[in-house]
Length: 360
Image: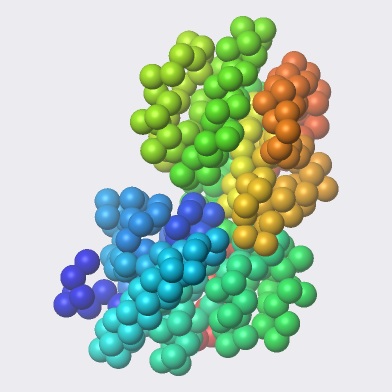
């Protein structure tokens, strides 16, 4: 997007990305804002990599993608380079926003949100945050004290952000998840296992499933697998031998429909995925990403287990065999699956967040 185009003037700016867990709540909030305030401009700021770089260019949303990258888990040299890029991107955005001042900025986390949130804080532009996970990220901790409000996906976040004005609202879900869904008990054979490794895929989960799926599907003729492997992983895996009822896809755009058609979900435990599972009313076997920041995926999965909506499967020694055991039990026993498939939970997170903006 050319900077000469006045996309930010008096606009509601959404910022967040890198992964679907940060990007999809931002999309949900943007959809809600467009419906509530049709005359209010809505625009996005993100990173020139990650899911927003793939999804925004083909979307109707005006946007600016900046050259920034993550910091966590990198070498000192790469951290230095990342901080330099962040400084340049923030300076560029501040100069632009002095000419095109936004109405407000809504940040949903991830490194792609850093320039917009830092620029808003420096310029005195009202900004709000949404933290979906059970543990706040470093960026949210840094900017939360001066935010007009921090919307929390879970109650566990509130005590971790002292000095911030927090409100627990849940995690926003996209428009497609704000409807009535058929109960899991209405599904008939062939039953579907939906496998989600996150928007970018998950190599360890992909490898384990490709190893065990032939025997699993051979023993369970009434089942099939729809497996989102991620764009990069598809190129690596698409020619590997696999069962005829095991379909690999790079990315699922119609996630609400895919979840509704699934009798069971095997997935990472990102906050957006957990919120979507609750909205659709589908049970899951959750495999937290061991390297997730502040171990938030494990905390998300434990929260789902505590609600009776999921079982937890840790990576580590014997991962494939333990995965096969867990899947066989749930796929063989309809009563066990039904116990996890609670009634769909209406999601009001978007409405509650936008209510806070009414007073601006």
